[in-house]
Image 1: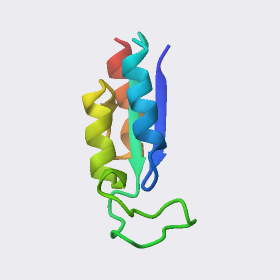
Image 2 (image 1 turned 45 degrees about the vertical axis):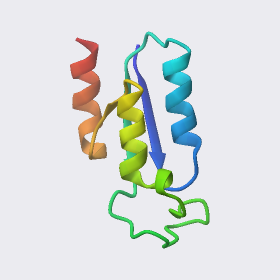
Image 3 (image 1 turned 90 degrees about the horizontal axis):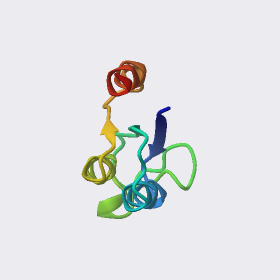
Length: 89
C-alpha cells in the first residue's frame, strides 16, 4: 500500500496532514505533490482558497514541510507514478 497526497498552494491543510502522518508513525510510504509551484504570490488561482497569503502557504514551503515529515515529494504530477513504483520496491 502507498498513500498519494496531492495538495495546492494556500492554506495549512497540507502541512497539517504532513505533520499528522509523521506524528502518528504511519508505516505506509507517502508520495506527495503540490500544485501551483509557479503561481505568483498574492494571486488567486482558480478559487479563493488557492491564494498564497503567508510564507508557509507557498508550494515551496509546503514541499519542504512534507519532505521534513518523510513524504517523498515530486515536482510534477507526471512523476507520481514512477515515484510510487520506486518507494514500493
